[in-house]
Image (tube, rainbow, N blue to C red; front, side, top):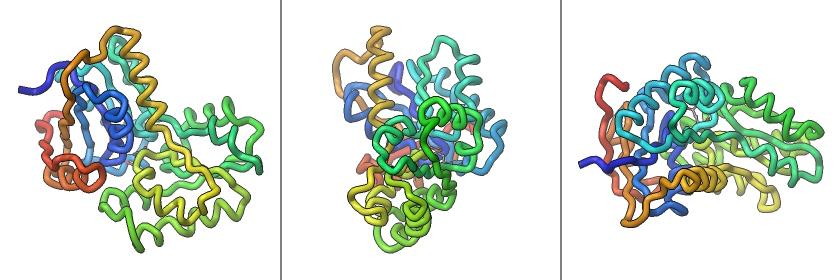
Amino acid sequence: MPAPFPLGVYDSGVGGLSVLRAIRDILPREHLLYVADSAHVPYGEKTQEYVRQRALAVADYLVSRQAKAMVVACNTATAAAIAALRARHPDLVIIGVEPAIKPAAHLTRSGVVGVFATTGTLASPKFAALVQREAPEIRILFRPCPEWVLQVERGEIHGAAAAAAVAAPVRELLAEGADALVLGCTHFPFLREAIQDAAGSAVPLLETGAPVARRLRHQLQARGRLAADGAGAVELTTTGDAAALGRMAALLLGLPGVATRLPAAWC
Ligand code: DGL
């Protein structure tokens, strides 16, 4: 029997598991329904319209499962689709993620902040508005890293392969004066160790999993919709290869590696 009223957590692939981890930490009683749109990953280089259509399809699936909230655990999909999602499902709690520009602007001493994200996020009007609103005085260096998304999707998050992938982009932004780095894609926290090694321990790396989880808790609390008792579970679903998602969830989060494929209508 599927769990009633799960919290939907959605990403193009496995990146949103970094957000799911933060949600599970503070809401251990909730049933989390993770949707990886793996048949369409990566989103970062696709058009906004393409990503919007995918996000709407996933939202329809979550509503069909009676989800009480949808966390768009993907910066690219948030930028492309959050307004359309809220318009289509006005009664659903919908929480998006955005690169952590505001805390980075507070932390920087050099006045230069580096942002790693997808091309789609960095090119979006929503991101431009965020920078304008939260950091008008700060010099923001944009660095699209689509190859990091694929690196994480392959599970190459440790060792020499990860170090080689992150070295040049990190070096570039530090050389231009950045002293705070924003991980503006939910895949990138899984490369945190390699990025921190390349940047040095003094450079803060900012991500958004924990604040997003707190916002979700706050909104559910305000509506009286937090799970009251029992132990929550994680249900893993994908539009792509279920066995591959199961393996990745085990590798990245130590979750039991069982996943299912969504019915064709949603893929
Ligand atoms: N995890 C995603 C994000 O936060 C998207 C990565 C991709 O599919 O390109 O932007």
